[in-house]
Length: 176
Ligand SMILES: [Fe+2]
Image 1 (tube, rainbow, N blue to C red):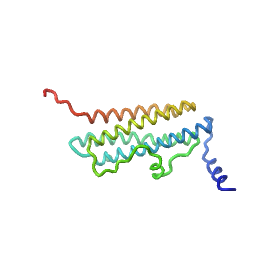
Image 2 (spheres, helix red, strand yellow):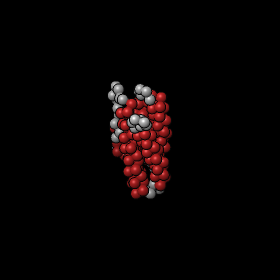
Image 3 (cartoon, helix red, strand yellow):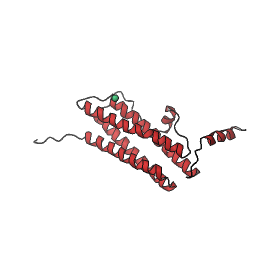
Image 4 (cartoon, protein in one colour):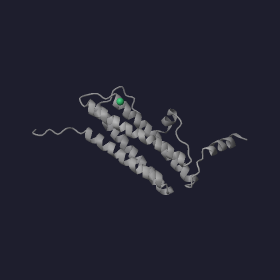
């Protein structure tokens, strides 16, 4: 048995039976695994900013980011399991995440609170955009189950972006 044949046999063991077809498996597994890498990147960045928050709004922002990180983390397992239900394989390591993630890490020593909120707001908008793209792919392949999960997750990402936008607005000063 040559190397290629051995690889094909190993892959066949992980090929969950599914009637959506080979193309759907390949296209959707790829898109969902990249989305999964972005979700882990966003999860860790949100935690990073939760841990390194500072300033007069510390408590509000610290708690907001904790809630948001939990919400992002919650979607990771269903994304990965969706790939397996389609018959594909998904992330295997932190290194794999780093190779696929489109959202950028932020390793800066200090980030101002408003810059943290603005960066997360943009990342969440970007995540929602990628999810919409993946939703179109689901439509092409008739994968209504992944599409319906994505609809909820897009709404959640837009809600996070909304909260981050409102929390970072300059306050009104009535009477001035
Ligand atoms: Fe915490």
